[in-house]
Image 1 (cartoon, each protein chain N blue to C red):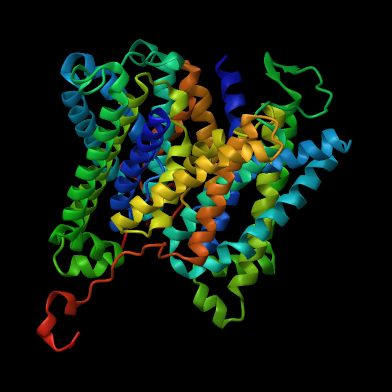
Image 2: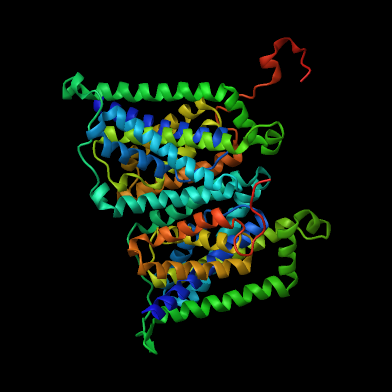
Length: 306
Length: 287
């Protein structure tokens, strides 16, 4: 039972981290990233390759920095263009990462992947109890990232990002460095995706390219839309409830005649698609919308002149 | 050897031309890139496979069946989804198109599994001409695409409907003042895009085999072609498609074939660096 609970919590934690990252990029800053899976894979592989040499913590930090650098480059190339171009560039990036992972066998092990990835805090407890450590580790990671991002979103930086998202022209006219703000948001988001990849690698201890499919990207978008774009609390709620729903489809397998796992996987992904479309049409603000802060919230004695 | 690669590249490019044209047409009218283009192609190829293999139609009839079916699917997705989101800006629309893409692709996977399917079609021996090997599929692709391209060009530049489409693409409000309804034109454009992607799905299924990821493999080349031509420019999309096809085939001289997709991505990145408006497009830089 602990094992199942750990699995569930770690899976939710990974998708929550990915979701929080996408929420900063797309929800707060309005930058569409269809290559989420590429950044997660990059983080996971960087961690897997470096952990034996640098230790888990060093590897995770390097993975985050690497993802941030790659995000900066991609963003720098495409962010000054219309949003459409960033979307296609990131989708291409995701594919290129997949092709590289499959073909650069000398580095990534190709389709076989990398095994025996060192885990954090292994020496602390006996292997039988390790599940609990991993569970706490993932919860702590989500809590730290959540706190940092929440501080960021409430800071002047976060306000400027939302201004850029809502109307870049006005923000620019007020002297905000639009390009720089966007690149920073995209880079921070990329770094968090790298951390999510690291957690993924620590949990499974072996990684291969088949684990990194567009499902990860689809989940992340679904979580952000369900929770409410721009709302970090909503995101945690969204990621949690989607995982619960998807886990529930496992039991659907017994209730309905299904020939194979392929159909189940197809059903899940198809439902994610339906969910994305329906929420966009029916409840675009999400289930727990981003709080609309007014001038009065900051200056209660202003007499409502806003 | 080189001539053979150029021939193959030209045909690959022609295959890309139809979906690139569909992408650029919908972009012109609706101002968002339709990320469901790849899965529309996949669904089109499955529709043709159903007609051809399960219902016993000849492939040509099945292709027409698939084109009509996809026109209906494209129209339906506009009625149910895209027209409801029209005023929400292009980001919402493109995320919605990604949702549609997931739905369409997984309908194929749910119905027919991951295994590859082939059309019932007698493959003739390749023709030899001055040392070049020309497959029958390549001839069919070339003929179908060239006919379609000519028809589309005639439609766009020599018919009242085409004039209305160009007017809406150019300036929707002005077109509305002159009595051209954006909604009607958008629906017609979707039907056209559905037909074009379905036909390209049939050609792609003939060239490779029908499987759920058929269209996804073309996604980046299609976008590269449309961006290279300048998003919104029909002539540009065709030229862009041929350039991408040639670049992909010729890259096999210096790159392992596994890396073909990287070529399209490199073209996109290169364009973003030097010439964002593509060959024929307008400006793409943000306001």
